[in-house]
Every structure is written in C-alpha cells, then in structure tokens.
Image (cartoon, rainbow, N blue to C red; front, side, top):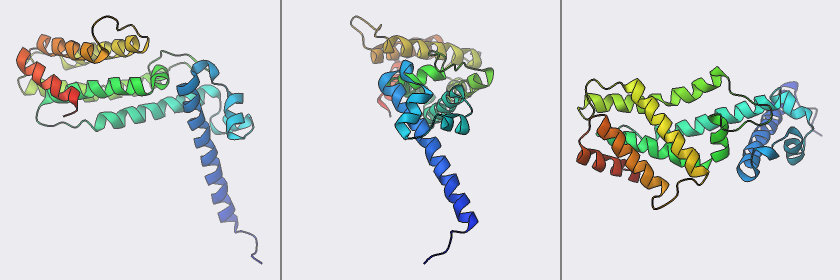
Length: 224
C-alpha cells in the first residue's frame, strides 16, 4: 500500500483546493449578479451554492465588500481585454469608434458588474474607493491615446485637449450605457444609432471633416 503523501504534496493540494473554492465563490457571485441582480447577493447565498461554510467568504476575501471589490477588479480585467482587442490600425478615428463600441458591448453583456464598476450599484456594504476609481480611470488611457493620434494625424484640431475630450467622451458613453440599460432610448432611434450620431458629433466638434468622420465611425462600429 502507498504510504502517506509527502507534506509538500498535501500543502499543494490544500492550496489548489483553496484557490478552487475562491474561484467558485467569485463565479457564483457573478452569476447571481447577472441572473438575479444585486439584491440577491449575500454571503449565505454564495456559500450555500458552492457547498461551503459562511467562514469561507471571510477566509478568502475578508468580507463581502472585499469579495465584491475582487469581482469588480475582474470586471475591469475583462473590460480591458475587450479594449485591447481593438488595436490601433492606420485610422485613429476608426480606433476611437471601436473603443466606444466595445464599451457599449461590455455594458450590455455585464450590466450588473458594470454597475458595480462605475458606482451605479451599492451592494453588500460595498462602496467605491479612490483606488477603485483609478482602475476605471486607467482604462481611459486607450481612448485618450487614440484622441492624441487623431490630433497628430490632423483629424482633430491641433489645439484639442485630449484629456478634456476623453472625459467628455466617457460621460457620453456612460450616459448612453445607463439609459440604454434602463430602456430610456425611446422613439425612432436605437442605442447603436444614438452611439453613431453622438460619435459623429464628437469627432466633428473636435475638428474632423464630417464626411471623413462618418466613414471612419461607421467602420469602427462595424468592427473593422
């Protein structure tokens, strides 16, 4: 018969088991948010679903707010992965439109995680800190750098302020995402049409030729 497992192997198995439980708790939290909304999220609910004790939440995360913060961090990681897939290409206005497209796609695909990320949902005692907000601000460097390339390429005015423009664009994207989620894009235009029109207005106000802006934005919103 085999002898007892070496201590190192037992320790390794324990670490793997702990990591797997931590992962299950995060996955279950994401599932509850997506399927049932913030009101359904609780430590008792999570541990019951994964077959653990309530202490598991506090052992692995310290608190429910800390678990929500980790879920938010993972949300930003997924958001950034979508952003990085856009790529620069030869037309910076196409790139900028593509970044706005993936912003809206992410907000639609993960509305409850998006709400936590940007402060639209308070749950399990979680509140955003300045450090949390910096994660969101860091994602803005991608559209900011695209705006800078628009300026360098002569598409936007030479005196355009990229830092101000990216904040204006962020306000537009967040407002559209929130209103679309709430069903407030009413009447004869879809959220995608509002997005396209808003981006055309943004680009031309920044100095782009209206026809060139329309072509580039249409291309970026198509994903090519």
